[in-house]
Amino acid sequence: MANQKLVNKLGRNFTFLCASLLIVTTISIIFFITSKGLSTFIKDGVSITNFLFTTVWRPDAPKSEGGPLIGALPFIAGSVAVSLLALILSTPFSLGVAIFMSEISPGWGRKALQPVIELFVGIPSVVYGWIGLSVLVPFIRNHVGGLGFSLLAGSIVLAIMIFPTIASVSTDSLQAMSNDIREASLALGATRWQTIKMVLLPAALPGILTGVVLGLARAFGEALAVQMVIGNAIRMPDSLLKPMHTMTSIITMEMSNTVMGTVWNNALWSIALLLMFISFMFIMLIRAIESRRAIK
Image (cartoon, rainbow, N blue to C red):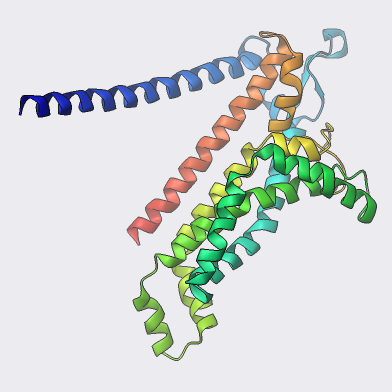
């Protein structure tokens, strides 16, 4: 009995230590990124409005030329454009796979496709980027137009990367629906496709939306694969076939070339702070969707 109490106490203390360590680490990361990111506006005197809504990126510009010029709008717009286009490309295909696995062939279909989806999840980002660089970029250059390095290339690579997330969550949401719903719809004379379209998809919509938001969050935060195919040009995303930058790609491209504490370095930390804020927004949106599903 004494040994059992000791084991329980040690287990409780260990789990408390793990939880405390997680909380302290999270708070430390948030504090560090926030302090670095706000230095651009507090220490360097850059206007938040100019940071968010101007397009000139010259953090090293001298004051005689109006510097430092820190306009992050091209990167913000680039991240939004490539992520939304990837979502548009990936969601219909992911939803189709989910419907096939859960409703058309729920037996062998899931057994055959689930390992494939898991394989997509396990492939490193650099492999996606390398395949895109070796195959997709030359294909776009030779058969579609432009340089190949483009918004289109980045969106296609991201669409493939977020496919397993959306497909897996959508499949689980559809399979979580009670068989009574299916049987009631069929008993009323609805066909299988009518049941899927008019009954199951609306009922599973909160779960499907959760998968879509998770995929969007993955696309927004991806850096390496996008950087390898998107072209990394500082410009607004006004064409599918022209190169551009995202918030993650500009950080990975320029952070190693800056000195800690300089205006340029602080500006990159400000972009990282904005990315962290957007990530929090995605988390809040997912929680809101989950709460709505729980209420229903």
